[in-house]
Image (cartoon, rainbow, N blue to C red; front, side, top):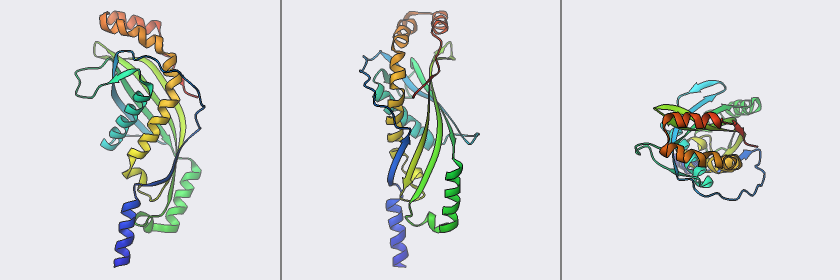
Length: 230
């Protein structure tokens, strides 16, 4: 009994640890000079996600991780002031969509892993690999008379490769994954967001002093490029 108790305790201690967290493809090293803050506020908006084409309702843990990733991205960009959900309103909102898919090879590995270790995989500290492909999209939008209006859209396709110390790793330590994901996406979209700097700068006086018709006109004159990060 002592042996079993020790094994379970070890599993609980290790369940949130990772041998490695990788996001691919590696990002090119591009020296993008920092730009001055724009004086616009931004709030985390909506989160949509699906796995292999099936929509999944985000849980509170998903929303918490989404907020974490958003705040890291905005910190790295340094252009907008983040406001919380309790703020009366924001100039801009950040809506995310994650389209996830598990490669066939990863499904085979998971099947063989379960076949080999059975229920012990859920109890013992056995290393477990996770491979998931993502098509990520983020809309930066504003509100015009209560209706959403997209200012810019950014996209990134990437793959996560996690080697967890137990099968529970990604579930109980999403903060670790969120830190890596936020830094990765922030670096991935930095060049594209900075390329739109003049658009955001031009939007400031329109939001501050213009009418809803002025905002619509500005957005029509500066349509989103649906930028795809390299």
